[in-house]
Each structure stands twice: as C-alpha cells, then as structure tokens.
Length: 301
Ligand code: TXA
Ligand code: MG
Image 1 (cartoon, rainbow, N blue to C red):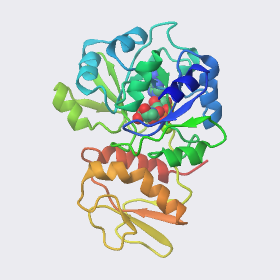
Image 2 (cartoon, helix red, strand yellow):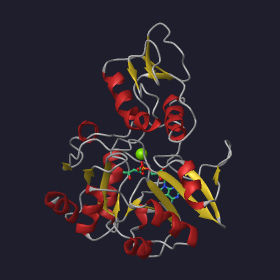
Image 3 (cartoon, protein in one colour):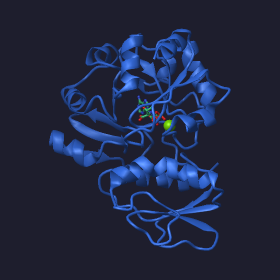
C-alpha cells in the first residue's frame, strides 16, 4: 500500500487488484501520469478512462448525480458498477475524459478503494492489459502483459467477479446499458424497479472502448460449440463432455465469469489453435460472458 501510494504520487501508474479485473491505476488529475497509462497499454487516446473514487463525496466532486444514478450508487457501490454521469469541469485531467462531457465513475471494493482513500484523489484505471488483449484477473497476467512498461504490480490474488464492471448511463429517467458486466441486469432491475435498456445491435457505440474485436486470445475462437472438431480445444460449461476445461461444472454463471479470462489465457498458453466454447445461457452474468466471448471471436484487424 505504501509503495503504491509513493509510485502514484510520483506520477507513475501501478497495476492493482479490484474485485472485477486488475486495473492500471494513475492519478486522474495528473496528465503526465495518465499519458503513462495510454503509453503502457498502447491505448487509443479517444478511449476515456473510468475514474475510481472511494466515497460518495469524492464522486460528487467530479460528477453530477441525478436521483436514479444516486440510488444506483448507494445500492451497488462499492462494487462492479460504473455510472456515466455529467462531469464537473476542472476536477479531473481532460486526458481521463477523451473529450467527452461525461465521466465514468466506479467505487471498487477492497485494496483499490483503500488505496484511493489513502491517495486522496480519484484514480483513473483501465484494465491492466495491453489494449485489445484479455483482461487480467491475476497479478501474474498483469505483470506478464505490462512488464518493463510500469514500475509496480500489487498482488492481491484473483478478483471475486472476474469480468469488468457493468457500465450504465441514466438518461431522462431511463437506465441504459453501455456494457454488460459483473453486475447483472436482473439485479439492477430488482433494486430499482426500472427496466434496463440495451442498445440496438447496430446502434453507434457509446462506450468508446467497446470496439468489436477485443479481449482476444491468440487462438481462434468458435462459439456455441457442442463438441470439439479436429484441432479444437473445447471450453465447456455445466459438464460439457470432452471439455479440456469447464467454466463451471455445476452450471454456476458467477463461477463461469470468475474463470472466463483465466481459462482462455490457460488454453492459449497450452497452445490451443482454436478454442471452441460451449453455449452459455444469457441469464444473469451470462450476458457479460457472452459479450466478452463475442468480442474475443470477432474478426481481428
Ligand atoms: O471493472 C472495470 O470496469 C475495470 C476495473 C479496473 O475497474 N476497468 C475497465 O476499464 O474495464 P476499461 O478502460 O478497460 O474499460 C472502460 C470502458 C471503456 O469501454 C470506455 O470506453 C468506457 O468504459 N468509458 C469510460 N468513460 C466513459 C464515458 N464517459 N462514456 C462512455 N463510456 C465510457
Ligand atoms: Mg479493458
């Protein structure tokens, strides 16, 4: 913790554990520090960063909350939820926002939240992977992906959620889903009584980072597979026969989300040429899992 605070204060980024995936954190008010994030990840500058905060007071200092956004924050923070709200001028460095008039805010659990509290300012943190690669759910994967490019990785063990946060934007009393993630639509609807609106499949991308090809392993991918064809390695769910690994033998979607990125990584490291993935139900965290799988399988540029 002390070492992380020192590195951050020196204007450098640190890879830190969160309950979703490892983040590459830097002072969200320091342009040089933010530039180091974009360089280390080779991230396009048009892609804004989520600002992580440790308290509601810190959140209100950088963003403007309507009633429904506040209700969502109170219910689900700290946790795997990012809220996009109008930004207050001048409290974050513009590099964090990539030219938008909104900011994505998240209060993480555990070490990351304590670090922000100690540091006293919001920390911008994208996932701690080279742009386009799988998100790291362990310190080792973060280290392997960014070694030589950042001064410090904090090892806090694997995250309990395993996929990135759900991104929501409240507009005119409606809740819009910009990215499915570790908080399910069902939980959001149950807590608010408001139905969550998904983007039409051909709508303009609103989270600039949601380019189609993303989270790509080295192996090719085939989805909704019921069996492995020649030269394929099967990633199963709920007891798929012949699977090399099973995301959740008991069919638990939370367990599957937790295992998703690390199992893809493992099959990659074992030299799989094509990973065939069993069908995953669309309920609960299945929506986020299917979203990441579709991006991992998308044509790569
Ligand atoms: O769980 C998470 O959200 C992790 C951990 C580290 O907190 N972070 C993460 O960050 O996944 P990143 O940068 O990999 O993904 C953030 C996404 C990007 O697609 C970005 O375009 C979008 O959030 N985003 C950020 N600010 C936004 C805004 N103001 N409006 C719309 N989308 C935004
Ligand atoms: Mg990412």
